[in-house]
Length: 167
Image (cartoon, rainbow, N blue to C red; front, side):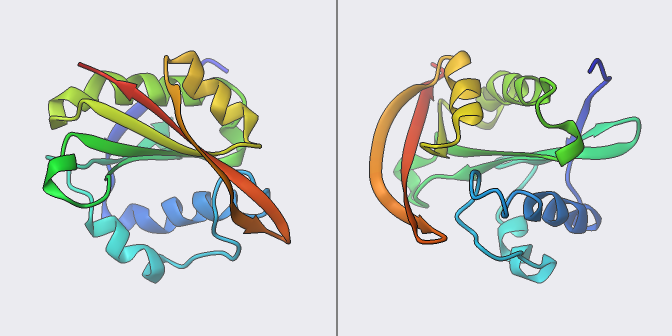
């Protein structure tokens, strides 16, 4: 899939699409610890925690249509961690598995220093091999393994934290 991809700051009008894309990942039990769909109202506080100047939330578009989104979210919420962010990448189900994740992650790595970020973190379920592979292909290393910290449909799941230093 060779598409022209653009990134732009998300607006409140984009939030229903962002939520819809997020909700398509819940059933797989691979990507998120949410077990039921969330609403736009549920995500308002999260949306407002982002800012174009410091913690961007970008929509990813092709041909004028949102095909995914990516956010940089503050880690742990204390000033000493200001240079560390958690990356979340979510793609419309029609665009998964075609290399778009690589484009998005490359953009984050390139742009992160502009936001005074020098450490990137990915929180990924250990059974989510495609996401683990994506991040490892960009030089992320396993920094933590949290065994059986999540229960999805009665199955205990491990969480892996991958990290990458940019500077």
